[in-house]
Image 1 (cartoon, helix red, strand yellow):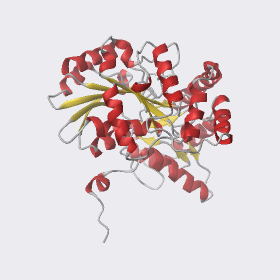
Image 2 (spheres, rainbow, N blue to C red; image 1 turned 60 degrees about the horizontal axis):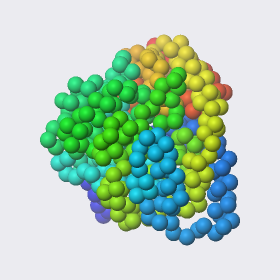
Image 3 (cartoon, one colour; image 1 turned 135 degrees about the horizontal axis):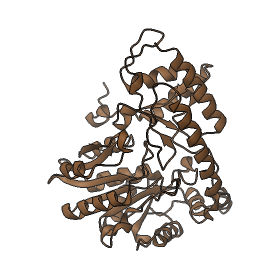
Length: 398
């Protein structure tokens, strides 16, 4: 008999990938499904990125890469953060297999049994499982739709105990699109200083903000913030390169070296071809983002107005970052589907909608049972078709 470990049996599959897989399976069966769950942009990378990859292949860059990353990419990443006011160099950078691996390394390097980590809900689906794999206890501070999901500082302070080791910050947020205000981030930095805590700042959507809103790079908040802050980022969202799996952490040398030890015994270094593509992306002129953000703004407007016009959806304050809406759907609770099922949860809403040909992610996966996540990083035609299907699905409810 096969005996699986307790840790893997307790773990739930990623909800975002589960919805994506279900949508693909339904399409394979011949169903017309519009998947609005996608957590990836539909655009193209800067031309410099694939050109660099082709040149790397032609040059035979097919050997093992250094565990911490090729020096030229680490230097370029450090230079980008120095330009933002963070005094870092190559030794402060570890290149990882996407931002997800950086977060996983940090959980294992910084936390152990009995330790606590404070994070905010709604949270990205993999945070809690990664911390639990490290044996740590996630302490979740709920943020509220009516507040635009800005964290309440009194709630954060109350969540900190003598076992707290880490505060995790994700701004702009997946799934809410919330960009945490500078004054609240500064207060979080003060709490971290007061309690001698490490801050993990997941800044993967930092270049995707709108309406003049700034995504603050956490270690720029004070002179001493870099001593306790680890930034996590990747080429996935800004550069539309999700499948290349290149991310990084930038932080204190001791933490970076500890995570490099973990990487040396797991994946080793990231493919050099992919790293050189990443180098092409992060050193490319930034004007490639101008039309991408302009398109995302139009899509956000289309989706938010379309959802608010459907009885049962409540978009609330328009998010200023990332490319998701996280509308409340508790307006559907108590309504009945054509087969007689009473909708009681966001999961029920998502399950009904996928049966009607629309994929969204239930809020339970993010720790918020009143909402669903819907992406607008999709073609206008896809969004329009999705809204049409949503209107049709809702019209069948009683």
